[in-house]
Length: 228
Image (cartoon, rainbow, N blue to C red; front, side, top):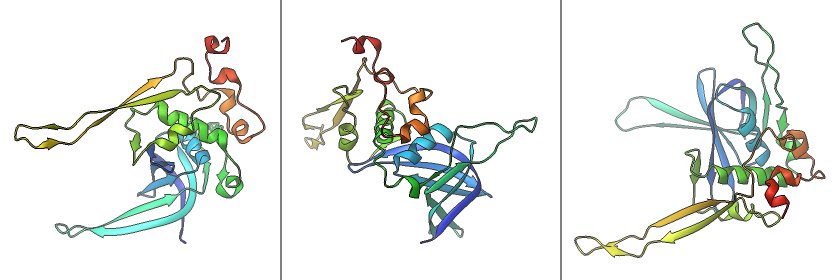
């Protein structure tokens, strides 16, 4: 296995999420020393890190398994390469303002070996909830199906988002040929469930890693729902 290392990378594309039957995966992009790199992760802790701390322009040190593919085109005499890193280690790099002062950050170093044996249920729930809340955003891409994402959301009888599908019956066109069926999905947001507010103290990295500390009910439910 080849190990890739970005020692002074700058994020060039905010994370994009892809939904398949098995998992939610994330893709982002960075540049280091003029080389464009695609970053991937299926781990909810790294996905959380990218959501919170990896805005465009943010600088991070990143390592992980490396994959490089070289290719060319029939109508071109140039060679190209695709560089991918599957993130196993990430930490923020110091950034200074115009006065030379270091800009503080709450980001911490995350290593896969430190978290791979943990259940990470709180991270999984938040990532799935965030994906559903932004399902119409162009940063969320569907794969084969979204069943697993839907199953992960039902907590305490409150599902933040519900879905319903409408399948049109086959019809024929002007030439009498059948037209393929189309499926339209409608997303309904539960008004009793709050949208994710990443500034909530319950969503800090330290609190999310503490599996013995449950989420406060007020973090997710509106006051009217809690009074019921």
